[in-house]
Length: 395
Image (cartoon, rainbow, N blue to C red; front, side, top):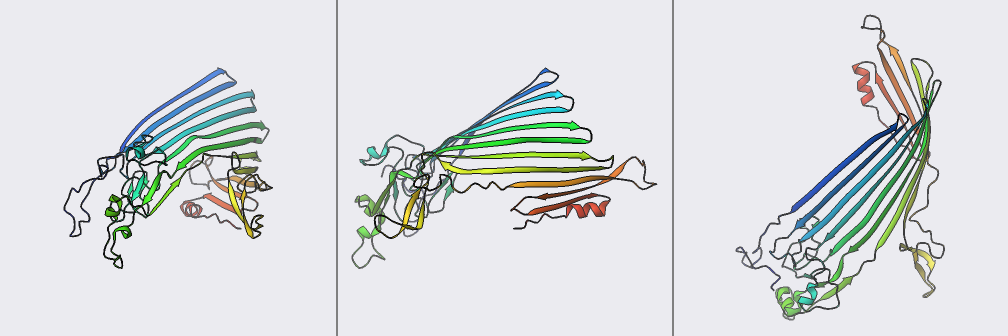
């Protein structure tokens, strides 16, 4: 009982609601940003940028003893990003730009006394040393649904420890992006084409219950035949009687995913008033997979070789099961066409060299619908019509 708070206020006739407290959440954050631009020669420009964001939160809970407080929680977060770009001018009409960026993140959410082996201090064995074991004692502790910082108390409530969260480790989380594009101006045409590649990685361990979760019941101390009105879960707890117990040990899940896109476009200036824009983009998302083929699913139609009945647990990359979460869709073509037309002002409206314009753009993506957008700059009425234009997707 050294880990359980004493009453600090008068409760009801049944001694309920005899404790109240507030949790002071503390946030510390440091941010550093640096950038360098250098022109080696008139045709070569390099840009580099670095960003780091360190943050941590500390929530000691409301018990006055964060070791056993269900709401006590700490986080350790770091976000770093680097960006590098190189622009080279081959000729006055041909320019190449390459960009690379990487974002590397760390998110660690844990109990405030993570790893201090508090289970051994109360004589409990067979569980991890990661946190204080969780005890659910109906009628005592923090009510279900209570939210404080990153912690949400589950539907069972929580008296000592947290029955649904020990720690969450996400490190490293890495996102990389490669961009390459070439601009080529020839006559009345402005061509642009290039490629984009993205790769994402997330290594995660989500520990929901390695320190043990123990459910206490008032039925242990009730009078036979009078369970509705007798028995006390705290009395059962003091006797050391546990109704149910569980341990959850989580594996490390290293997941990976990537994306590739290619594009080409042309701005064709037909005349001083009319410009046609046309382009094509192809993209493919390579679905998530887990290193070591740790994903699994269930096939209700396959015959179980042990029981001879339908229903088999399948594992990614094993016995013909695909390694990725779903099939790669390679039929993502996005052609688009649009035009811009300049309309001279009518006589008597100022400088005749100034003009209004009409922009129309049509985009079609196979298997994902189409969109037609009009933007009109011909007066207040038509401007309003342009703002109210809608894009409708079709199956």
